[in-house]
Length: 635
Image: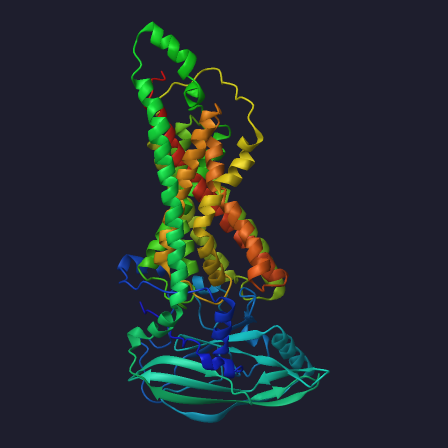
């Protein structure tokens, strides 16, 4: 399989003096996301990982099998898409604008990941033969009608950019620029770029780097709504470099990891680690001074009747007093088991995804690899959700396991499907390339029918055959104990609000970088950083859930099953609140399509995080409660 690597020159200080350079695209990203940084761990790929990634479609490939060329050879050149700079998901086909085109436009065959990413690669009339310099080569002479002028003006007003690929190396350039002229009464002029300078670096028979520039005097005024004759031209200049083909991404990656950016990440991890350490010390102190003493006193009780009576009157209060109800199964146990199954599956997906990132699988601008990997991982891990849900459902003495299995399958997939259907309709209405073509929908359907669903069913069957009884250290009383009336701050919502504060503080800083990558134009490749933060998040969620569960039992409230799950998952609600803040305060996104995409898909992501952390919180609380009541004589 061919590995594709890309090279992009980092923005330089001179960009401020060249506002019509295509490198301005990168500079504007730096201005918008000045606190961002990217990096990558490059490790050897293993064959089984490659097999997973090429499933359901070919990997990203150049038209040249090995990216080697001789002088005069044609190097593949494709145009991909256009989009408003601030709305990264509102992408349109390149020829939605009246650019110069060939008589017959060829479309590059796309894999599933590229289609999910909204890519639509098409041929262009640009001819950049290997090692052939050109000066003011005429691309086409075109008469722009009033309609064409109007399209270009709308694109320039919304800051549209275009994305091109040369030997699978990405380039970006703005279509035009708004120019303000005059004194006192300022007049806005619409300037359309008509000349493009391509600067290509090579090493022997390989293309190493490509840059796109638009000279400041190479534009046509299209302010007035009238026909305009435009001669589109381009120039090509080849330069030799010593950079090797295998390392043609290093400069881009290295220039992205600025020292002050990395210091932010390091301070974020240090801050999170300090908070976690303080929480651990606090819980250990409480355990040593209070909880261990209670357990020790319980173990040291004698069989003397006087001691028993004394214990019953004085010691059997709080969490000890609910030993007959603490392991009473929760209400809606089928839904509870389904939530655990879905959360466990998503947890495995995230862990596997981060592991692939650490192995260097997600190279920047390998089109569609990230999205396709997520889809495949979710399908393959359906086995986990089926097994976890059904096996736990039988532990809760459930009987209708098939109904539970179906509920598990639709608990997370259902909202995703509804959201995707709605947003795909919106994208189709707007004519955006983010609307999936029929071929992609068929591939996703086949993946769900022939891989995800059978694995989900297989997991359920395994869970049913390996079912076991719930191991509880205390017998459950026949008559449920009445929960005493508690103060308002011990209610579900206040406890959820309290539980999500510390875990959210762990990931707060990283959220900005991830959001600016997913909903912006930069690439997030610091998988080592995000893996550490995710690990700290899981530990913090587990500890907070354990602490709140203890205080709930100490108040003689034995209904901790759902409470521990809801408190653990409450961080997902905090993240969605942060989404609202990010949209209005940290981004310039606008328009119904971009807004619906942002809030729709982020709602699904936050719901997934809710299920993941809810499962972690409950399992941690379950281990704690088992240990706590196994240490006393509760039978």
